Image 1: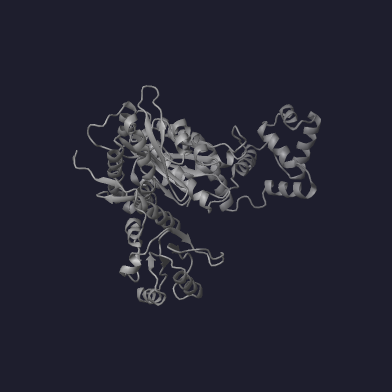
Image 2: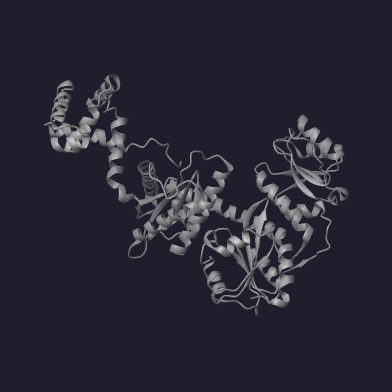
Length: 557
């Protein structure tokens, strides 16, 4: 390892945060419409999301995000006027077709710094980056540590606190760890840095819960032969990004290390936000390549090569969804991304690799088929993810694995089978409830439900070709609806009981003679020859496919 590690020096006396510092730390692709020494040196104290309907508050030295406003609109001109009069630090706006010259002219006219964000920038991310940048610049000086390089930042944290450092996300993945020589470590540290995963998920770990509930760095005492640790929860804009864990440097250095670690929180949040942005790019690339594998067989081999995918022993497509009534809320978006992280983590543990992506509202994973019992491994992955559903959402997770695709060209079929299985599980488990009354999660392989899924295809063929129009079942349904009779229930009981009168009577909770009367009327009123095996087969197919047909909106694209 290189012994010359980057260092972060904490400046406790630094209070002035300049606009230029924030722009540099945000690294959000902002273009300064009117850069000048006076506005670049403007002090920054906070960030404000602007809403023209809100009551005007003090915005001196604040960066204002002009969400939903465009250059030239009355609201935008009013914002610049008021921001300038109130000595705001800057306004961030999206161009939305306006030229840089127009924006520069507006900025100069109001003597105000105007920063132009890319049109596709996410406002929520910009707010988080801006606030983290203000806080980070206020407490720290970054020297030699590239923003988002969590391994370099862990080395810097280890250098400052005199203890080996690890950075962990809320799912327990180790995002970075220090590599400084000579610092003592224990077996837990060795195991977690080798696997890049905590042994116990944070959601079930009492130590993590203590850290998450604390405002600053805390001491976690030694236990079970492990060394004590200093730990800090890292947040940005109220969102938990993860935590930093430092092996206790000893009583003589502990207090100084706790103070330093607490002061590091804003900068840690900034680094983790930038690291997540880089990860988001990787997720988008993964998603594009996996979408090509599932949708575009012509270019599938190219996508597989880009992913480094070994398809020699076959692959299976797994599909995971959260069964919630709406999917457009901010919370639903967060939950589906947590599900993607969970799927990635579980697949990494099971197969030492993961090719997963979020496409639409479905998380897909490509599962390898090597080993002696690949389908057992596939079932275990689906069940484990279902078991962790309560850590992701209060709504159930539906997990399904399509059949094995021996060639890349067969992946679309495996995906279709996974989605069909999802729909069947969703329909079949709609009434099941978990321990606390919530609907239970469901998981399964395509072959577990091959017969009902094939019958669903038969039902779709019947409907698509108009074979059900005005047949006996349709006439019986219409009669029952009009006359308030129950002939369809009688027919279902007859077919289910193979015509056994006693079994029918028990199923319908009526006397045998009543059953004989109903069957006779059914046959006479609808001209049904129930002794004809082909007729019985057709009626049974119609009833079975009707019962199996899902009523929910299909998941996924």
